[in-house]
Image (cartoon, rainbow, N blue to C red):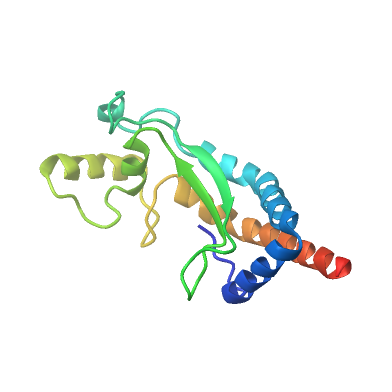
Length: 168
């Protein structure tokens, strides 16, 4: 998830509400443009995740088996809490739970069971967590791309606002 700090979420929500009444297609076009421009980053982040199970015990078709994730970009200018709105999100979703488990195992606890601790040790030996930030595969790739993603998103939003100003 990227939070663009330079854009006031409350102001953006007001602008979106006005635009929905005046020009409803503008928000739809902005979403499409953001998805189109940022999907390559999301795909690159998803491709940094191993395509096969990182540990042999995860290579099964069960609910907690491992399957590589799919990347998705979403833009929700009207949603979020009062303090910060989640404007732009890059989500990686997998049909099975193994990806989420492998990505975050050991990021908050050292494991609750002997099996969990062994899994975390095996993952740490091969794929260490990002220190004090969590995540093994996707989070590391996201942190490398984050400045460029944020810059691109800000440019798209600012260009769209300039275009709207010209039309008004």
